Length: 241
Image (cartoon, rainbow, N blue to C red; front, top):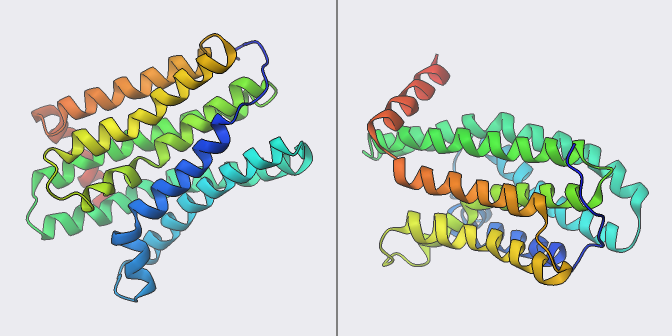
């Protein structure tokens, strides 16, 4: 278990809770929320379930922050059990949901690039699940627990930021600007904000935040490389069996 000096929560977690809602509601507005409201979105039930689970996590994260701020620890702990179930369900449904997207992109003629995306989806699920489990394992250390949950939420909302590309179709290299720069900016903000408020870097936030950024950097660099394509194909055919 990681040990750190206890410190009171700052406004960071509340603000990031609203940032998470913003990323999901705006990012998925044109590709999911509005089409669903107009009955023009057609997909298997699993897609709706996964979307609902992700929205539940982001909403629950904000609610948990508010409960801590109001010192309602009993309900916070009870909802934590629900949060764990939601997180596990998100991880379980992530690859099947990704497969639906891949099949659609293959039908659109994207070819190898479509199956290559499964590698990033797999990594995202493992990272999100690992952060949540780490947060729960350190639930008796508030400063560590809340930072793991913050990072898990920032990882989960990555697809929301990436879909901002639909609002700016003229931006070249959207994977870099929206999937990397925009998404990871909030990790950097969190690290620096905590440093300013508490006068020192939080070990959990700094270490794992930088590791997430490193993973995103490597993913951006190696995406669609020969070995990445091979891994994507293996994941694809393994799920198809």
